[in-house]
Length: 349
Image 1 (cartoon, rainbow, N blue to C red):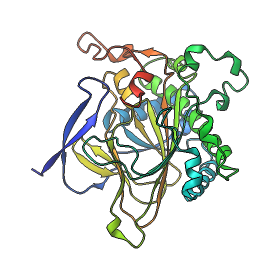
Image 2 (cartoon, rainbow, N blue to C red):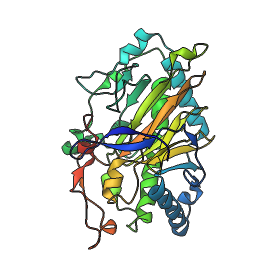
Image 3 (tube, rainbow, N blue to C red):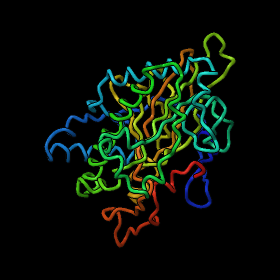
Image 4 (tube, rainbow, N blue to C red):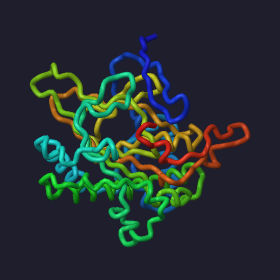
């Protein structure tokens, strides 16, 4: 039996943290069974096509909680344009990036430099740079024409921090990121409808709680070590995602690792034309642990810089949700009390 080490993780539920015994073996490549590639063409087809797709997605969500998606409807040009603006932003002089620095007294949105966040309690601060933006109804195609109709209960949960769009000297930065964000938002809403079908629920079951959803986009920069390998790794420490699902685009090179079978690290390398999708903690709660929110981390070991864009999708922050009816029975009662996505997703959760 291989050696193990304790991996400490945060959780919303008491006592607030837990640990897993994890193999100390070096990461290996994932297998197609562990992280399958799923073709989303059926998402745009008839009900039978969507149900067939739902079965495939649910199988992956129940097993590893991770899968790739292709033919997802997000134009490659939109992704590449956003990527180029992100690269330009992170290579700006520090004083220009600091013009949109996250204000810890307000929120974590905006620019965060290296060593400012920790997601794993047992290790040092993360050594990456990031830029974070959040859901705004004015950018949501569902609401751009009706901004005066936003319910107060919804508005109370939407951050008010326009400083993230201060001028940094990149005229295309904001429009390209918003266009990419809008594509991710549309895709996430479609995927949640497919998940509803897979859970034997009406396809529109979650529509009412995705009208003003959580929709954060985090752009990450992991600098390569260049000609100085002694600089060590740049990483995002082990964690699970908090909300419903995450859509991840990642640049070339290995970095993302998932905890397969809850004990062994495996690489989830980039595949051109795909996103990586993973299930979040809130969806695992709603399905009574039927779907898996899997631990993952990023370790940048390469000479070249690494970039990623992660879209985190959650339900309306003011809506209280309990375990869905198709995931409970007399023999398998609900393990969780109803809670809002906002409560689970708060920064100190």
